[in-house]
Amino acid sequence: MKRSAADATLDPAALPAAPPARRRRAPASWSLRIGAGLLLFYAGVALLSLVWTPYDPLAPGMGDGYLPPSREFLLGTDRLGADILSRLMAGARYDLGITLVAVAIALSIGSALGTIAGYFGGVVDTVISRLVEVFQAFPGLLFAMLIVQAVGPGVPNIILVLSFIGIPDYLRLARAEIRSRRAWPYAEAARMVGNTPWLVAFRHLLPNSAGPLLAFTSINAAFVALVTASLGFLGLGLDPNTPEWGSMIARGQDGVMTGEWWVSFFPGLAILGLTGAFYLLGDALSDLTDPRRRR
Amino acid sequence: MTVPLLRVDGLGGAFRRRDGGLTPVLHDVSFALQPGCITAVVGETGSGKSLTALTILGLQPSAFVRRSGRILFAGQDLLALPPSAMRAVRGRRISMVFQDARAALNPVFSVGAQLADVHRLQHGGSARAAWDAAVEALRRVRIPEAERRARQYPHEFSGGMAQRAMIAMAALVCTPALLILDEPTTGLDVTIQSDIMELIVELCRDRGLTACLITHDLGVVAESCEEVVVMNAGRVVETGTTEAIFTRPQQPYTRRLLAASRLDAAAA
Image (cartoon, rainbow over all chains, first blue to last red; front, side, top):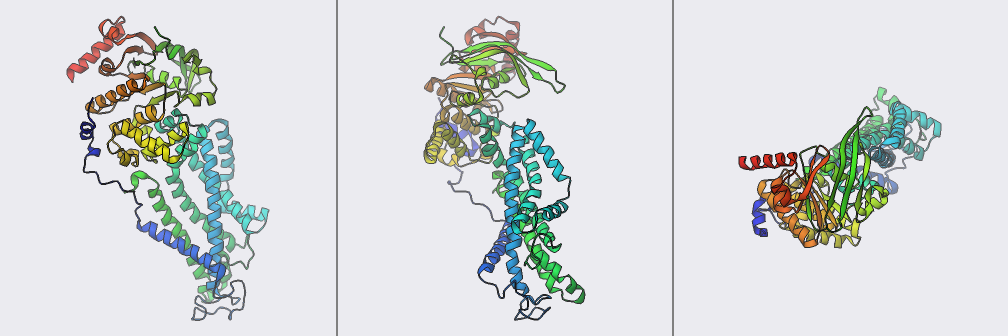
């Protein structure tokens, strides 16, 4: 019988050079800092707009129409004389809120169904996969427009529509991920110790797919933010006076031709910042969820 | 002869091919595992050793179609058990150590968390107690600095350390009556191999475990096992005590196997 000291010398990883036990800290990469910072900023503005905006974002005639940015109206006013800064702030509630809720719903339902289809296979898989293919035959934005027309306007309906068109992508990704892992030795080991199939699929395999799923979520969130703004721009789903960024751009369209650029420019910038933040954050998140890539 | 803990009785089956036909892989496989003994199942790759072991646990690949036989464990036919009853046997009564321990550990959870998870699954109790049990099990398989190692992830473990952790999971956190080891030392350095085998033998002795060691390393068999089952091409060729098999092999295949491994030993 060997002593444990002799054992230790056999394994280079156990040599005394090992640093003292310390809890691993996530590295803060630049994309994480900027992405998270921007999102926090947007969230902060959305919250702040609940209690304070410079002017009433819904009321026209705060000043004259088409006032350029000035001390009084920092980002100018639109055709109806509403303060653009106030409307931008209130708009963060709509664009960020709709995007986050819709993405969260699509991620949960899509990856749950995809996990079931991928792990159990068989008839369940066939039914789920064929259904999804039917829905994927339509382009996302077109599909969203059709359903919004069908179910009527309102924030809850828009959220439902956007999450609905997101589900197939999450489902297919989760299904492929789980399928590729269900025969791996650690899945076998999880079954070997007596886990139920549901536990193996959701607690042992799904966490391994967190990186790809989160990375996709970020890209999808950027897309959903764009679709939200597009629906607003087209005047679908929300009251035209809603301070949603897409509809604000639409309201400023005439002005762009005659030199009143700020009416459309600032909402556009807000959308750009939001989608950019999602891209940056997703990039960083996919690294963080993989223990092998943490340093 | 005492009543065996596990008896594989006339197990036969085939793989279903893509074209729907069947490729027979197991033919009337029968052997018994005596309680408290370490029994080796030896044979070349593809002889059906691992498939038989996985079938004992009910984890055979879905393409495998069983056509005959029973697997009696403590008097119960495992093949007749419903899935829920089979899950209660897995881990609790029979557990298994896999060949590639680093792949059998889940890459996104720390090693300690995985052991603790198994502990809670089988014994319940608080998360704290489960963690302590996990660390204790790692210490018991002589992983240095168990406390720190428990917080590390599988990719930070060497192959030998990972196999120790796997053994801790299968034999200590799980408290089985029967432990199946599927080529537990394949792919490890020779020195680590003997350490791992010593550990396995020691744990089996301490806990009165019955073990089934699947291997093609006859050197390991000679050192550690009491009984030997020789398999070839899906059939049991010969069974007997280690001494009998090594000194008085009856079958030509067994003799060839022994001769080949001696050549190996001479070359190494």
